[in-house]
Length: 78
Image 1 (cartoon, rainbow, N blue to C red):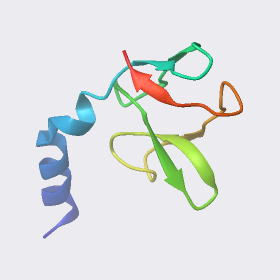
Image 2 (cartoon, rainbow, N blue to C red):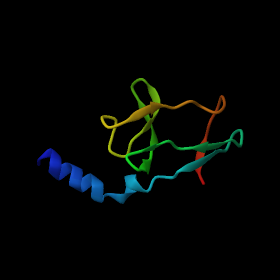
Image 3 (tube, one colour):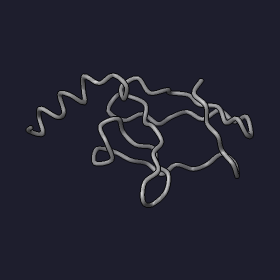
Image 4 (cartoon, rainbow, N blue to C red):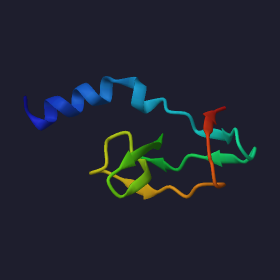
């Protein structure tokens, strides 16, 4: 399977394109807006070097360091 074929499959998978744009911390009550990349909200992933916001196209496209809002964040989508 070529890279182009894989990108077409990923682009048709709306799971990553429809990620929540807003979260609320269930611990401290802070509202957290997901950064945008490639026209869609980024999602949080645990990577080798910590938690990051990641583009729906993957870490090779875009990632941004996640800064926790409190000592024990528990984010729920709004």
